[in-house]
Structures are given as C-alpha cells and as structure tokens.
Length: 262
Image 1 (cartoon, rainbow, N blue to C red):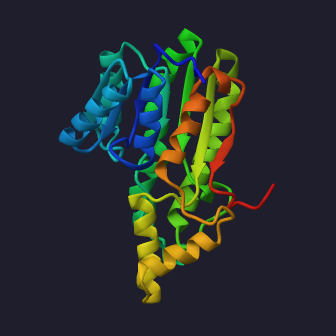
Image 2: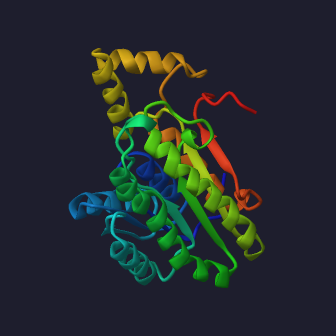
Image 3: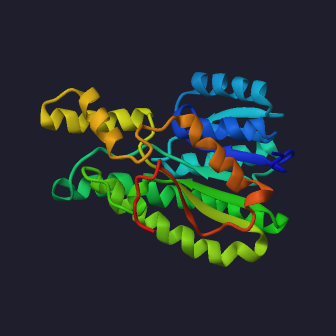
C-alpha cells in the first residue's frame, strides 16, 4: 500500500531503539525524510545510516534529552533546519520507574512531569504553527494501554500519561480543520527494554525469575504472547499517512487484545 508519504518530513523522538525505532523504520520505508533523537550521537548516526538504507531520502541524528526544555527547543530548530520543516512529529520518551501509587513521592512527580507532559507538549507547540500554515500535519504520541486501564505497579506512568490523553483530545479538536491530526498509539506488552525493566521489577519483588513473570504476562494477553516491536511501527505510519487523515483525537491500541473494555 502506498501511504502517500513520499516527500514528507518527520521528527521521531526516542528512536535509537524500541518503539521509536520501529516507527522510524516504517516511516523511512514509506519514503519519509527523518530526524531521529536520542541521547547518544554515535548510536543516532548508525540509526540514520540504516534509515537511509531502508528508503529515507535523508536521515539525521540529533541528540536531545526530553528532561531539558532547552534540548527540546534546539531539537525542534535543528529538525526544521535539516529537513526544511517538520510534517510528522512522533513524541516518545523513556518511562518512569515502576512502583505503586502508595510509593509515589512528590520528588518523582516533579522529575517526571517535565519529561512526560511539559516538554513533549512544548516541542509540539513549537512545531505546530508550521503544520497549520502548510495545512498538513501529524502529531503522534507513543503512549501506553495504561492510558485506558491503569497498569499495576506503574502508578507514575498511569498518572502522568493520563494528562497527555486530555491534551491530545483537546488539541485534536482545535486543529482538525487545519488538516492536522493528533493521535496516541498505545502499546501493550511489547518486548522492549522497558518491558524487561518492568517485568524485572515484578520478578524481584516476588523473588522469582523474570522468565516466569514474562510467561505469566503472556497468558493474560488474548494473543497469547508478548508483542514484537516490529508490529508497532506500521500503525504509526498508517496514522501519519493520507489513509489516516480522518482519524484524530483517538487512542489506538496495539496490545494483542489485552484491554477488554469496549
């Protein structure tokens, strides 16, 4: 299927590995030029070279830390300079430490609110005017099924990601007439470093092997298995494409059926 994305330009955050990398790969295969961000320049340079091999007309790596507002401003400016503009923004970042609601501290909330809410919104608002002026744009937030059904032992994530659901829905209604869509792609259990960290924390608390926890987790998923990162990126690419132009303000799950609610 031709996604109609050739000639478009994307900034994908947290694209060194995992879900961000899967999204970047699929956009590259669709002919999108990319800037990818992460913390390590050598890793980003390697990713950029591989994205060009996959089909990206241009690909650049720009290191930036979502914990710092100045990094987000610089990343937005560099992406626009290198690409000539940004049509597709994929918001992505690492997750906070596991823990229960009773264990949350104010210091943790103060540390993670900028990374998960304030600074992603900041960079989106910096790039949004160009999208509206060109009458074409896509803002895609990589979220979590915890946005719809709180995940045990991930209380900080559940709390702060909920704010992004409200923001996404509010913004979507305000910019839809400008042909700018805003959607959240919510992964379930997918085999990334984050998944290994989360299940490892549970295993440590229970005093059992992480492999046992992963096997138990798989049994709770209707698909009967943990997902592969390669199964995530195609949804991002579809929502970014012309075929997804009438989908906005939505939370789209890629979760193997784990959320049972209608």
